Length: 328
Image 1 (tube, rainbow, N blue to C red):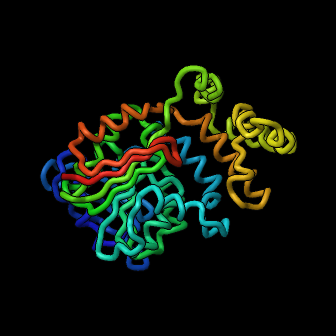
Image 2 (tube, rainbow, N blue to C red):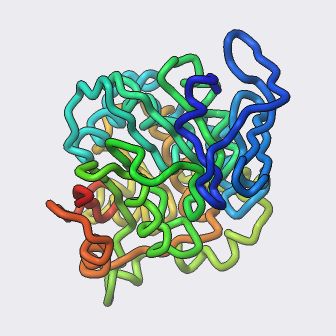
């Protein structure tokens, strides 16, 4: 982290100011050190350029493995496509020039959307709960406008009313308490600030029977992550030629997904090898998280009202349901 970014942080317990001690600098960055709260005396380490406010091992560890194995898979700069760029701007509805603003990203994963947020020229603070922050740093850490933080969505290390914009894509359904996660977000926004959040859609009735990942997850989420990943990788590679034939059938795409092959052929114009990479990544993503709790449209809409947000827009979208609003 850069010393100039210290002002963007606060104690996650009491929101007090933090001071830097025992700093080791490398290439004008703080490689290691301690952040001490002057109010409650809590101390937090800086390790490998990243302030850490949570234990290294936690319920999101499966995502660390996922993004380590697939550090660049979903990056536009890797694929040559504009998949992440399109989703970022269509889902947020933000301008492409945000110089002078400060954006908070909650749940960065490998950093596919961090890359897009940085292109706006804004200062970007990107938080993730797992060690994927290190993967993100390897890809985006050279950008002067980026501060990466390992922290908890329920106790984010930021002061109230600090950010112009906040986005949280593909995250809250994978937390222990989805509503609590959502309600933790608005306090960080300035008055008038914009928020964009999405969540998995809860299917009901007969449609829910075809979400076969929920048949398997009681077992798969308890497996060793490296073992599960090896199984998923071997399974998708074995099924890939068959899935190509199946998708030519009526409802073939839906059948492939029911067979646990995340098949994006026909949706994304990518080389076949990269499409298989996406399939392995997203199939593992369906089976590995400790939590996967989708929501109904009505429930998600109600949370925006309960949070006191204004100019609310809710629609079915990329991740299931997406919502945008402003803080009053």
